[in-house]
Length: 362
Image (cartoon, rainbow, N blue to C red; front, side, top):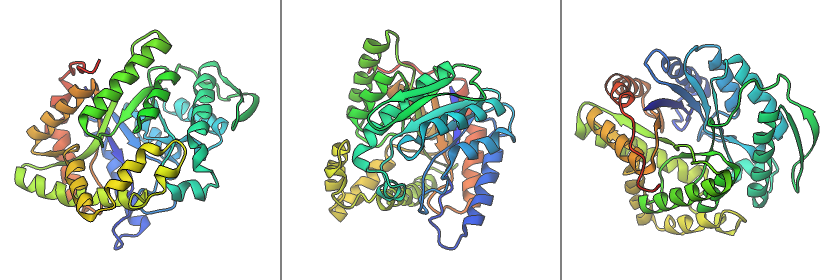
């Protein structure tokens, strides 16, 4: 099983400067390769303390020069906020300097503060994403981009340096809504899954995604990438208490950044499925219940419990890789490092020996 780690640069503790956050989190990134992880991942967000990595490809290029073995993954590049041919060039450079170690994850975005900050109408996000993704996927395979769409107009131009190996099998997209899963299947790309819905819904959507993928691409879909928040401790009770404090704290940052306490998402084209979530979290009691639900979908406990939860979740999805986030929600950095090192020493070697059984959803 492939095991990765993510670094997200949360700055939600007002006592920490942005500089302190970056210095500490970059040190965690430097631990990925020596601790035995197979990949290092980053996320893209803008303008708030939710996560301070506005250029995930720049971040990964930095680590391309500091590592020699591990893969480097974007979780995700949010295409509606970018000129797609510029993204193609950045990807080509990153893949060259890393000697082909890049894993391309893309998404369409959700935060209103980010869309407004870039002057992009969020009602157009799905269409922009699909056009951008199509141009990128085709362009990275053939070495040049050209597109004539509703939103993306691109004259033919070469990507230089030219991509030197295929991105098939290493291109993924984050999908939360059922509609997004169908889009990814039609585009022929894998799914990056952070569980945040009832398993029955996730499995149904995965089954639908795999069916459409086979119909359109005439081959089976690649196994999804599973990701989640981790708190690993030798004491089960302490692990649960700290997970409730910090993974629960992370959930509060999600509510704030995405403005989930409100009603705007259900009114946006392409985001209708999020409207139900906003209705649920309007009630403070329901918000507390959502913390319990979200916590139940993440990885916490003793090393043995973390191992078993990952295999359980991976088995449901048919995933053959897991990426964990170990520092978040103002967790003391000493605690985060202990969390990371314990997981790396006790859980990672056992996961690497395991090949998941494909999910029943197939």
